[in-house]
Image (cartoon, rainbow, N blue to C red; front, side, top):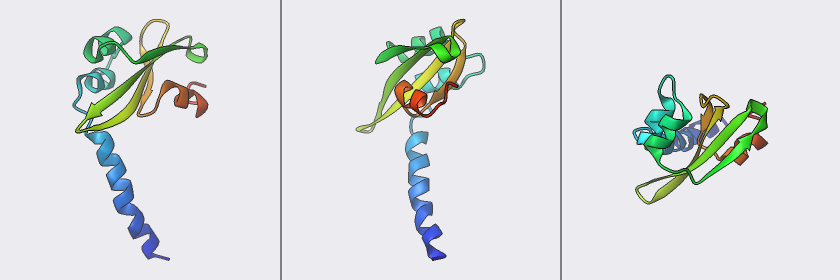
Length: 103
């Protein structure tokens, strides 16, 4: 039983490594930056795959599909009505809403 935790470590490590491979992408850098805004994120990432209204934050959320080394990863960034970044993560806007991120 105590070895079960050791078996999980490689799985958890692989998960975090897959996220890290996208960290240097321009859209990620723009999203992570202090004072990130919708216009800066879209300027860096290009036209998002989709954009949805987020009444919970009185703003919008944009979806991107990150691509690198033949793999893809969903990514969202949510902004208030002034265009200031409020939330972001490696899931879609729809998944973030379902998980209660915007509440």
